[in-house]
Length: 231
Image (cartoon, rainbow, N blue to C red):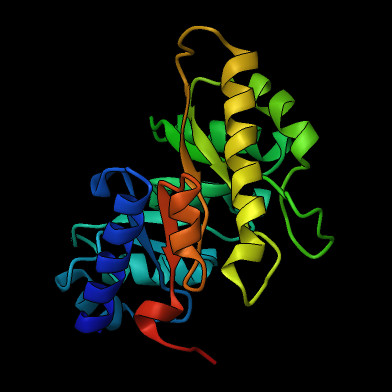
């Protein structure tokens, strides 16, 4: 695992350099779905500082076992509204917000524990029926609505594009998310908004993260390349 993580960081550094970006502007989120708490602990000793989880119950169990280790927790799966109360207690970032109803519930639950919850809006750029995410054309309105919530901080956008073996076929979806972010930045507010920054782009996985970085990714979600294939 140590060699895999070293190689991934080397690849991130190269992709950043080729696109004239700072290596430090890109964060690696290790996707740990079905990975044991002990293997996560090992990954942290080899330089992993952010863990991505897709299921609340699995995350709750591992979070309890790994209390105190120096990592940030990122939720990257589909989040049901009735699980928001658990999500805000565990996760520093929730990447997959895709509805006003979920925003409202996260705000309520975060307020109960005196927390400002960092979120990203998941955008279904590929318009796939099998994937969660708000439609691209509806995203600006959701951003506008989020500006009125006191316990939510919108940090940017996230995408899970259609699967292709060739990273170059995925690149247009990454580019589209970056362009959407820029349109939102320019059209929705000309000055600072207290709870919106739109600095983050969560995109890119094991097979295509270099292309995602070249298109502006700040958070890359990598599981298989770190932990290997899972059943």
